[in-house]
Amino acid sequence: MQNFKRKEFLNEFLLLGLGSLIFLFIKILLTRFLNENYFSISISYLLVHSILLIFSWCYHSLVTFKRKLTKSIFFDYSLATLFLKSLDYVIVVLLVEYIVLSSTISIVTTSFFLFIIRYIAFKKKIFK
Image 1 (cartoon, helix red, strand yellow):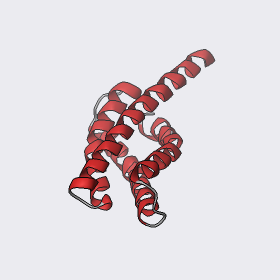
Image 2 (cartoon, one colour; image 1 turned 45 degrees about the horizontal axis):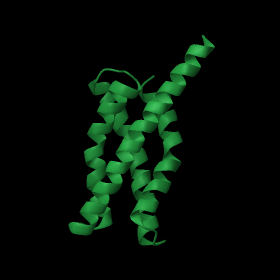
Image 3 (cartoon, one colour; image 1 turned 120 degrees about the vertical axis):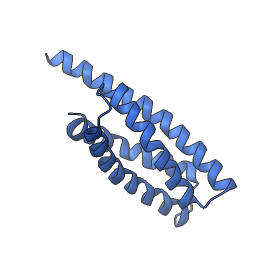
Image 4 (spheres, rainbow, N blue to C red; image 1 turned 135 degrees about the vertical axis):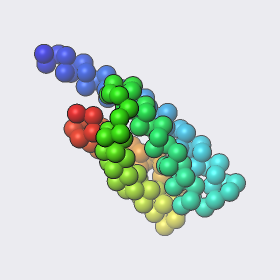
């Protein structure tokens, strides 16, 4: 039984990591494109987070945690994601605007920091 839980944990953790890595690259590329061509970092990053909410919910529901796409899971996922993305957003904008780090370094650093928190929240609260 313990071996099954360990295997399940590793599988979910790897799938979460893979999805997060894919979304991180999309986040970086789309944020840079929007910021360099159309909007400020605060608007660009907010738009990117809004777009990724739907895609990440589908991926993590269907692939990472193998759950159906339900309204209740979407609601819980949206609340948890809103909190985590708000924290992500504030940290990245502060790092870019006030510490003068590049948007890429800020996004990577913040995303890595929030990765573990995201897994615990999803596993224990959203996709239980």
